[in-house]
Length: 289
Image 1 (cartoon, one colour):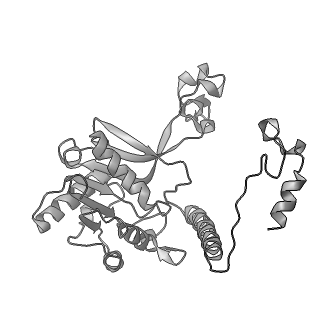
Image 2 (cartoon, helix red, strand yellow):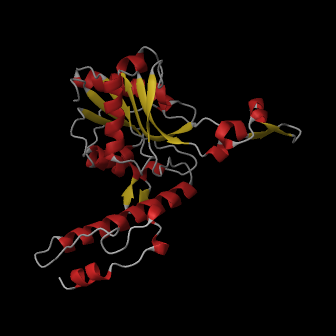
């Protein structure tokens, strides 16, 4: 619970994905997508309830092992390729409230297909929803201006090339373009009213949490390969950081921190080190320590 708001996390994870069969059970770094989201939710102490919405028994079993509840079954009608998020979330909310005999104020959708999300992304989304009294808050990423909507093209049935938006004819320099964003799938937070009464994920008063680091929503085998790469890089960085911390905190470690400018190198405008000269006296004193 945050600010007296009861919070329900819903993890939609059907078994019938077509692009990558049973992708929610596919492993990255030895951990399946469903397990990853379950393990992340364990870090969110402010969550009142976290459930999985699935039609697949193995997904339900794996989800339960990581702490997610599976108090209801998603019907075949809600597990098809053409079913949107809204009816799935509405069903999950109503089914969970019926079981729990309570009412939730905030619904958070965490799709397993976003393995690069972190706990702080989810918290920032819910915190902004509450603080700003928004109907909904989504996580988004900035769109590279090279792919701005006003620079997009289309081909018609005859193979003729056209601007997707005719307003693009007025764009000469990228400075004329306003920054746009795309939803990255890391987190969606919305109020009960937004979902049930407005029947919307966006609502009429929506905001966003902008994530600048790499984020990925997995749809293809190529996406899995990219996610594997990013997670391996993150693991290597964490391992390096731990090694540095262990070494510097050992009883025998000696840590000496100094500045460069004006201490071991002469001060130069704009810190252009190509023209710096060593301050030999200070260097000798430091080396003698």
